[in-house]
Length: 383
Image (cartoon, rainbow, N blue to C red; front, side, top):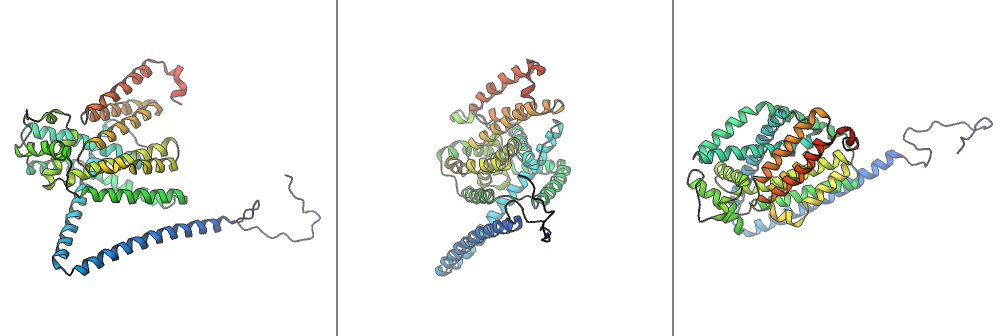
């Protein structure tokens, strides 16, 4: 389209506004206001529903006219807060420990959303091995667990300072990120689902496997102050990485709620891993959508309220795939670290459930082939 000539025009040209688009005459600033008003309307509707639910709950409590309910509610409130605090402490403890291991492997993460699931999972795996050693030397006692927790906290205090700085910087950067309405609604859906699943972690375990196997065997070990032979219990000979973490949780808090929250944590870490993978190799929308699809799978919701080991297995397997693909796409200096991390995560998966043996062959065969295949003939794979 040729530009219009104004040589013979008698009209005076008016300066265009910087927000005005000449092609279609639509004001982008007006579009932003419309999208913000739509987002505010969604937030307002959600807030109204929450307030309505709280008002109905309060009305029911007041109608009962029973002071014991208020006392019970306050006790339950502090009970929940204490366990959430314990979970946050455990997350940062494992994050710092895993970050220290990552530095030893010379791995550099592309974003905080990538570092969080990898480092925290590495820390959980390392903590599981530490508890295994405590059980082997008959030190399954709360005092030993408190000492181990304090020692690990002192060792990773420098890493925790760096983590808090990175979180602060990432939070400041998120203010400049503009998401469309669909992505915002999807993120709200993820948060709402995670909150609903978290409530399931505060319920007592009722499943047979959880009571007889995943929690029953660790409790038997705790009663015996260490790992003992249980010839009458066939499941006690299965891989026990997650169960060692459950034993740690019971020794730390005195009940099984934190153990159930650890299984819920595995689901959250998988969501972060899927989001980070989608954002790194596709775009942010793909990452958000993949995390939303995973956390809203009915089986994931069911498992997150139990003390099984399936989500722990899924976590290590997903991260091992992630590390393997990072190994394929990383430059030469970082390749060995990602391959080692893939091997460690695959080993942790094997120590969680025997089913992970399939992943060992899935990674081993391609790794050997790529290692012996000249890189010059495989340039498109490493592009």
